[in-house]
Amino acid sequence: MARANGGQEQPKKSSHENDFLVFGTVFNEKGFALPGAEIRIRRAGEKKYRWQAFSDRRGEFAIHVVGGAEYEMSVRAKGYQEQAQKVDAKAGSRADLVIHMAPAQGGKSK
Image (cartoon, rainbow, N blue to C red):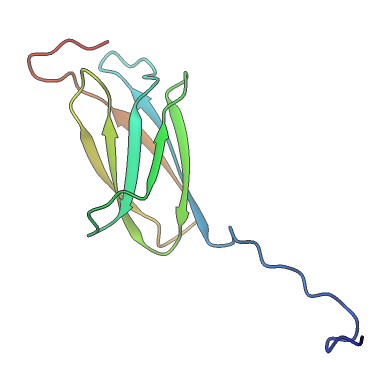
């Protein structure tokens, strides 16, 4: 069977071609890495979070989202106030974030 493109296969486009990487590190109030923090991301204006990750033992996380949009990110950890931050994925291919958590009111941090 002959192919329309002269027998050459077309290279497959990667499904991650338009990915945007949200990379970050979560720190506690003393400046130490905070493992186990929950990071959730949703498109700006949406109610439901679409992406979720947890910070690793070095407090780091990485989440791939679709580029070309604005996102809202929420960071939660037991004993700390929830942090909210906007992420602009309209330009470039990566955002490097640093999140400093504050102890919850009247609560003790880990």
